[in-house]
Image 1 (cartoon, rainbow, N blue to C red):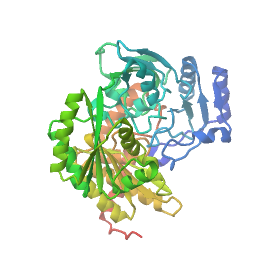
Image 2 (image 1 turned 90 degrees about the horizontal axis):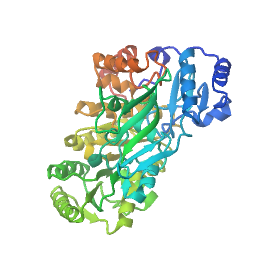
Image 3 (image 1 turned 180 degrees about the vertical axis):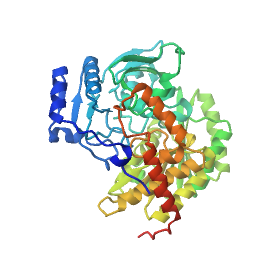
Image 4 (image 1 turned 135 degrees about the vertical axis):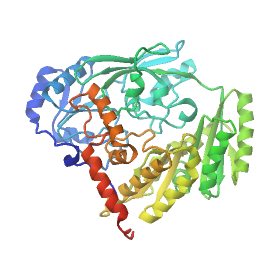
Length: 497
């Protein structure tokens, strides 16, 4: 059960005159590229969650800080909402345009401003691709640790907006742990620096607040990130299991043994078959689940850890354990995992990628719960996990051309997220809330907690002009969500065809 975006719940859209706003922006910023024709704006109608599509009022493509500042000042004066967009790889409709708002596209801000190998930092503009930072730092023996699966395309500004993670976040942290400073512009066009080049900054930790704020507090214009030395050696073990619950229990056993892997990922049978067919990674397609465990550091320590993990996996019931023979095979193992999403996309006309986080101890039980929900709703689910930190990505397979099937997929997704909450987890680990999970915010947080979130936003954006209608639900939306959910839960289950 899910409630789509509805102006009755999220506030009426203001009636804005496109031509008048275009003229005002063109007068204030005559040198900025401004798109207004439908065919020019169509490529920007959605982010990576393409089931939601909206044409914006206008699309702005600034190429200077001054242009962004004047755009925000003008929109603030006119009361025009602004949605900021990076590479558009997000999966929660967080960068979905508003029909009555300006879409601010930051793709031209793609310069690496500085690599400082002594301080081990990089200063970059928000449009820089995640992977490009590591490529630029590589000659100095350094790299940027957070590595979302979309790292070849996603931008660092979007990573900050969603507090992105990735395969290696268990050991090296999320974006919030690897960003030390951001330069931002508020909706009034005021310049602010959050964080500092020092180990700490005075006052409240607004940098942590800004990471994961989904474009609701300000526009990022520059980011300073930590760079880490490349590990001396990295080795990967792939363990196969004949039961997904055994694989889930093995994750906790590895951590209990005192090992913190550089990466610890899990895939179930459907995801294994899809990835192997797409990439040829060498996965055992007869397994019910596999774990990929990467251990990195000094060679002697890594060898010892590999032996410890091998013993833990055998005790946990692994039916097979294979260690990558060289860097080429290690890269193939990870290529299968990092291409799991497009691989699953080849198995079904559509899929719906969920993003929730649970305590590691609950992995096995939640996998069983997802399997039961999949059977009840009549839709297949492929499971891909950042297993080490409990960040799960169930991929719900469906066909949007079949009437009502998208709604069924959304309802199943909502049930999975609410299952995460019931076991002590959260409704998002790294994709953000956006528009997709706004109803589940009502399930996770109390009214007083949501009021605190709204107060934090109001401190930066009192007129609610930055990415409005997303992330934080209104009291009216939550009231209707709970009423409808209560009625649905008390009704007899409908048979699934």
